[in-house]
Length: 249
Length: 326
Image (cartoon, rainbow over all chains, first blue to last red; front, side):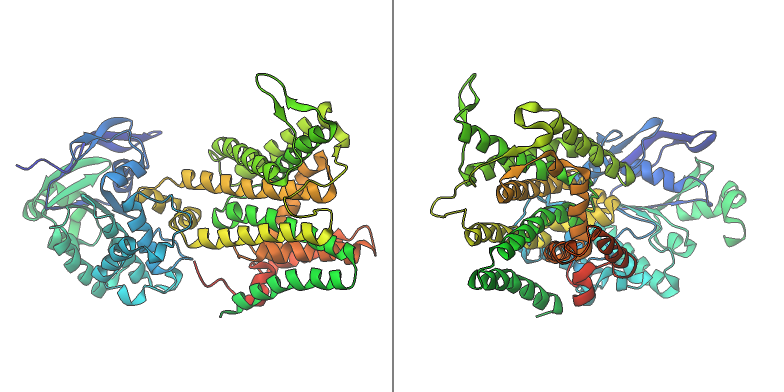
């Protein structure tokens, strides 16, 4: 089996009496989409925060590309190739769509200390930013202010900014949230192709999308991974039905 | 050309026409007023980099303004008294040369901004305001209790410092120097705004989490912004002290910090010419109403209130509408 790109080992985090993560060990292998599902309050966001570096675990390790990054800052992990999208769009609303994409390209270039050059006339930044917008279908809206985008378009821009980083792994926090059926379907198709570029750790509520995309699924309940397996295995698992899927499956 | 570009051009034109008229009509006091406005505008352009681009609400910019002022006062007072600034381990003489004074003023105020930034950028919001205010008060009381350079009474300079090829005692010539500096600062602001650094700093103000997620450190961006900002405000301080041929602790007071912030807010936060409009308006109001009542700032207060409540873009925003570019 190929070496995992991203892995957590016994990740635990408590907030007072609440055990938000309880010994979570998951991994993300090259070329796969690994979905994390679980009811509200299962600790999905806490897990992502620890993987991306916004939150330090009490115990356990995070490994990325074979290196221990548990103590590394968010920006250091991003610079190494870990790209995330946010559950609620974190975009510079006053800036244009292109500027948001340029920011990602600038981060990837690692050269923000240029004070007199023009960011929008830097060929390499621009090529990268425009390619990402093109990929998610926002190329025509590049000059629009981000605040004027619809909710769905903002979700697309979230993904585009992650693309500009040309990352080694994606961590996506509910990219389908609030997209509606049509948008959800389109993004599903897009992510399907994206896994060839870099593996995706996908936290998602939209079960149709998860079942259509995931190579593996892990089920998180009360901070614990109660099952990991293929779509079929998870569908059949009685514990998962009890804990989460209920009528849906 | 957008409406804002027209407004900017008109303001720039006014900065040339008004003193030109004053020169023709032999009204040197008007030139002095205009010089005052230009220097305040320069200080406010400095603050606008931290406040407008970086979102750093600094109530301590008088520190940089005052350090610039004292850089001028200390160097020039040693030069006029023919005493060395320092004799050991090597001799440093005072100077009456403006370029050297400017260099020292910018270096000293940037260094102060670096130190203050390293400590205060650990906080944000109200705490950042408070900690910058605290640094300001520290410097203020330090200046008051330091008798070597005048303490509470400040330092007077007999003759304005010199610039090669110019007679700086002629009001219009000194005005020209200040205007050139303001134009350079505005040009720098405009370039920064569109630069890769400005792009990242703008985003760091709006969504720091996003900036971290693309691999950049928002605090480092803000620190650099504060250093550039402090340097420009420090330069303005040196010019202001030269205008008055006098520097005192009042340049370091929190009221001074507040005034610089008022220039930016009245004129328009994050607008290129906001500081120019704000400082010009302030000096005009001070001159027109100051003669009517010593409580003229009541009117300024009312106007500030109106700007904050009704027009977030300040004067520039009211006239030119919402900001278009990023």
